[in-house]
Length: 134
Image (cartoon, rainbow, N blue to C red; front, top):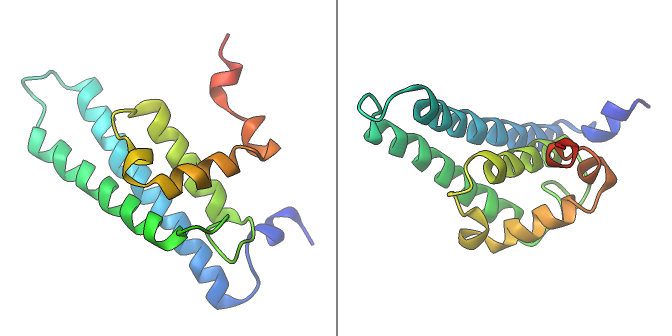
């Protein structure tokens, strides 16, 4: 069995759950990146605050869904580390790194615990891009 097979369950229902969390993480990043790009590449006069708020509301709604779905579980799906945890962990870390004003830990403390536990894994801690910056 290859490494990818262990990250994606074999049963279709469980695989769909993992892929749903992965898509949710992608959606969080899509909306958040659009906010960052709007702020970085358009002058203040050209920026649409209404559009930025719409994208941020997508991020917030997705974080709430994620928080409600993960609850107190150690992982997104069946208390087993999967592809969904990689995607969600990367999305949460990106928010910390690029949009720190989104204080998702305060709004969803369970996600803060979830993320802290993910960061105990060597696959997360050893690939933190901030540690590579000299």
